[in-house]
Image (cartoon, rainbow, N blue to C red; front, side, top):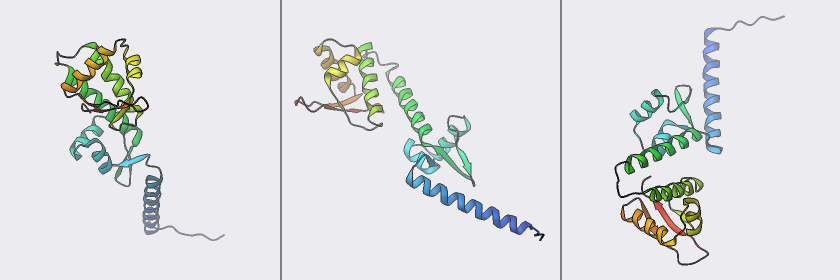
Length: 175
């Protein structure tokens, strides 16, 4: 039986190789399936500074994985945070807006639902009958008044489609 002695230098070399292999693996994984994002990508996605990202991490709103001194954030967690920020921003904007009624808010939430179904991408395509059904609006006049009001109040931009096969285009401005 042969005995091999492991030195500190051997362990240090092993550590360096392991970190290098992990970095390569995570780099390839990120390119093929971006389940995790690095700090720079998260800041760009949320449109925040490095300090704001640190604050989110310290407050526990984001729980990254730290590998070799680099923070990796779950993409799913980032999208959930972004959606909650959008809702918070919207609630903050409408809090003191006395022009809005319950019907306006109902339509906004339905439009936001479409936005989420559209993978959080503006503009969204909508159909009047579906919006009216989800928002519990029975009158087309009420629907058109609410859409016109939301556009006039700068909550949305609305581009109507007069073709029955194509939906109208709405861009949510409160996002």
